[in-house]
Image (cartoon, rainbow, N blue to C red; front, side, top):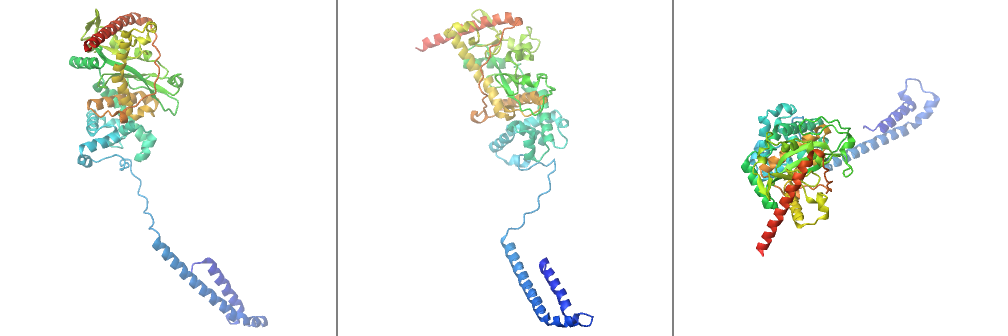
Length: 475
């Protein structure tokens, strides 16, 4: 009998009974009490009725509770205890060694590519490199090296912010950021010289020259250069502190935008060969800069200008050929946003003299250059941003932006050396097309510009003549 209203009613009736029943009082009965004693039987009847009603009500309530408990599901179990930092969400991607080894190789590699952007062998090679560098001290001590490395690689591959990835892993966002910065710093400084470099082997250079000749029919074409904006997602005013020698200086917020690109960005200058392997990467310019100025401020420009090859660019000075009386050394090709130099040839369409001339030789040369760029550096940049989605909308602080881009270049080359898949439908990324602005001629390059014009003209005439002979021979 746990109904409060019922208890209150019974209590009131008992008090009334005490008042009306003369036998329950110690005082002698009065005339009024005697008169009221006639109502006692009615009072007892009322109390009995209330007790009967209370009993039936309690039985009904208990029966209803039993039916409800039998038909309703059991109460949910108590929530699990919170996970520790060292044991992130097991449902995401921390695979044990036994489980990894039990997977069939193709399924294992597909699983790793979906989680980290690389196959299992490349993942293990990277981890081995980090252990060889004794990188444990660079990563947060609250996570083992392999797990901290997994967190950083997953962020670069998936393009997630530190906050989003931290939620899925039950980790603090600051810990995810520290893992990412530690990995990109090591890749961009310690591993960059090992995986991103100009060819030091003359045989390698000769093989590259022949491959480009098969693609473009141009002799001595060694590589292509291009500039690509990397969009930034900034949350606070930038205060960069570059840690890589090819990192950007401190630009103001306005310098990160240009009329053609109103969003904040930094520029990636990249050189790549026919294998889509990067030979050089430079991230030293804000989005408002132009590719020609970026080139002149890079170490690559100084290296290519070195006449005696003391800077280590000696292979690019080997294998000099003669074309129509001109000595042609291995050269790069770029679009019209780059200056015309003996070691960097650009299309005729960028020159004022080409505007009044539609010579087939010039058109053939421009078409060959476009093929060379498309098959090498343009495809390499598309593959770079396709694999490492963080480069599509770089969600790190500006002080870590350059090292993150350079780190992804290192990872890209490791994938190319390992012959990772290049499925264009899945991995290729296309930036919005931009019309290149012709590079302006600077006084210090005037003599080099004229030498480049002579070489370009000789190569164009030689190419057209060979095409004509090939066409007449086919007929």
